[in-house]
Image (tube, rainbow, N blue to C red; front, side):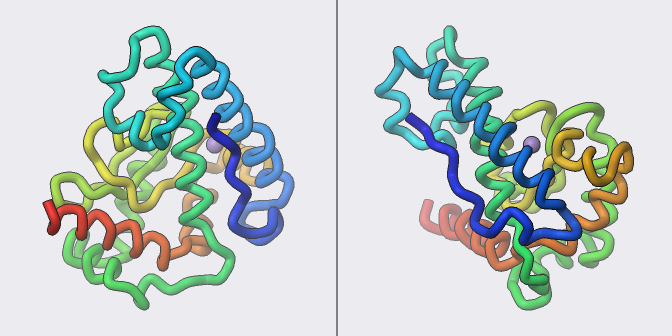
Length: 207
Ligand code: MN
């Protein structure tokens, strides 16, 4: 059985950028439903639940066909949201404190250019999905996925993400996805993002 992880901060911690009501609905309802549906789909496949959801998503073709779409959608929903909660924080962390800032500057000219490009990708994801900063083949890339697809399923390691489903922002921002993206930069846990980046770096070094 997979379980819903608790938020690593109080529900109102990200106010005013993300409001308490949105955080309750998003975590207690939306994320919880992905976890429940994932467990239902795996009722007859308990051996699979011994692996992490990230491990299952990394090799979808190895999943029995009967439940592959459930793992992709419900499992993706569980993994993506679990990851999203981790890279948010209320402490107004500064990217400049971490090595990731140099890597972003090297790849995208400047942090500002990176933010612009990320915004363009997040805005142009048609319908529901996610915007990502990933490490792909050792390089940083900005990408998006539809629905609950995970970058892990195409061999990319996520280090930052933004949920652009309407349920993530509609209560507070209504139709203004651009405003939601602009405020996102104020609630990022750069320490975590940096850790995720360093981890992919070490995986690459040791392999
Ligand atoms: Mn969501």
